[in-house]
Picture: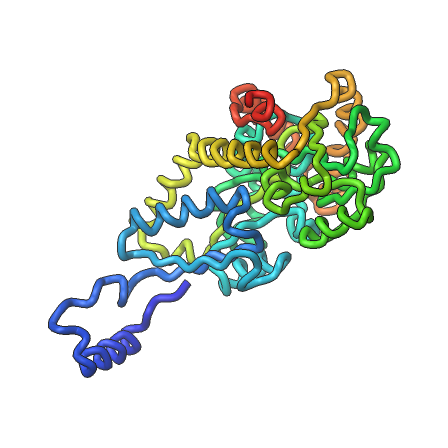
Length: 366
């Protein structure tokens, strides 16, 4: 966070006056005292979570008037993927979107929120993460003390159907397939019989085109369409795995502490609006756009049968959560069982009330 120093402002004003540019008019207040914030992210402005971040940033500037000015750095234009957590921690960037899958060693507690086949609705997952941040102190400490960052609001990557070159009609069809994975999605691929292939997102299209990959998993639907993966891999299959990949939009704690009380209050109001339905509104409208585009351009949507979904769930859960407790939580002295009990209670509170439709449901409506 930066504010223009008084001496620099006076020097600039004198220069303008000498050039005849002030004309007796008062300089806007923000020129001297506005809080300067850099929002820095590895994804493009058109990606799903970016729509929500853009709304927050636009509204913050609008409601704060001259008190806040924000510069936006999209698509790794300031820091590269994997660098943003340290940048916010050290306040070289004031805000960023963080996808925990890129920071598994740095965010062991947060990894306890990353799983599949445990709930149904992405808007409910957002509220589950919110509740855990409020209820489970080690989660707050991980962000606020270890990484000196405040979680402004939780978001996620919507839904991530299996995207393949050939149709998937059963779990048997997944066996032996070479599938790009991300984070805990790689474990899902392996447990379902596929071969997980780690690969950076920009390389995926070419890998599909050349036949290096048979499919992609852990790639949210909207990003898949934005990357035009359906041109090579047009089959989108719902495995019954639920929402995909929690993420958090964070602010440097030093930046937050230096914000005027009025601006902090505006941020709190915006966050409440996000949790009260703005997330669902924005993601719902965006996903409808992408489903329409996908269908028009030849994408095919399908779902496994209920029996196959139940079989898939049995292969993943509770083994995935238990693996986090044993391999991650215990070595890090995290009370994993307590955290997951809170997660279960939050899922029970919120999942049945979730309304954000999956791509297959939207496609069936058309």
